[in-house]
Length: 108
Image 1 (tube, rainbow, N blue to C red):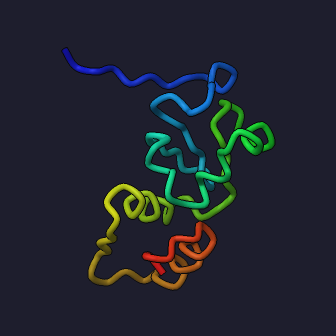
Image 2: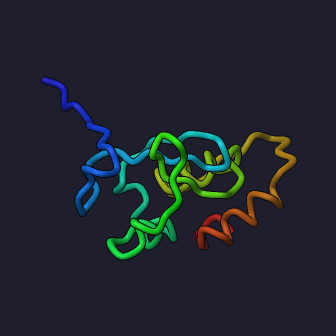
């Protein structure tokens, strides 16, 4: 029997977060396990004391006002502990700024 992951509405979330967290990063929607975020600044953003203060979009997803397209690489790095970029990736400097913002030393 396959495990079913649940996406809980914000009002039903308890700590630690259950399974999947929806993020709206600069207009791009991402879904990830809360446990993926634990080794980054994102973990402190979602701490018990801070979560009530985080902005949300009109669908109650957590909103992070950063570059949405590049966040996929941040998330890949958190998942895999490595980063693979396309050969001719023109946004390396912008990605470095995102890595600095999220305090991902291994990505910087």
